[in-house]
Image (cartoon, rainbow, N blue to C red; front, side, top):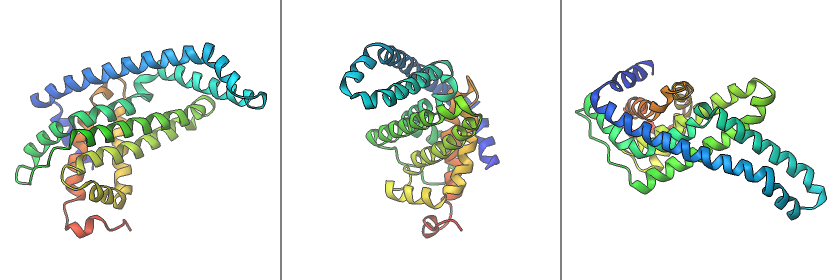
Length: 244
């Protein structure tokens, strides 16, 4: 696993990867700007017209829980705007990765596995669906971890482990579906969930480094290409056997 991470990092410095790096960084920054603007407007609405409107929609019994929920969401948005480089990047990079999976994987396979059958490009709709799903799950994880981040340091650990679980699953699935049907790729993912969770820690560690995390789509995808080759290298019947 460490060898796979080293190979992925080394290839990121090559000219073909640098071209993809600038494109993925540009897209990630654009998405972050759009998210920031949207969150800021939602925060303003919740603190003014939104609260008044929702108060009118619910009875007196539900106003206190509603205000608490609005307070938590507003704080979550504020923290997100302040620390978005860390807490929003798993969602952003997962979405960006779905646009560049085939280009990155092709470069890795061509350099390191030229004798193996190349992967088939993912349908655009499927890649977009997986990227959006991963981004939404990452945002949900962030919202669930915010209360713990505010009141206890355990929130950082929860966020890191949840991010590792999510990114390990989603990056592997994007890569595996180039070589397997969606159902078979998911079966492999379920059978090797422990390995992919540990692999996801490498990606979660990378995405937690400000500025550097803009390159997460390249590192995560390249890393998972190597992991897929190791996991799916044996007889096909062994791929879907549960871990023991």
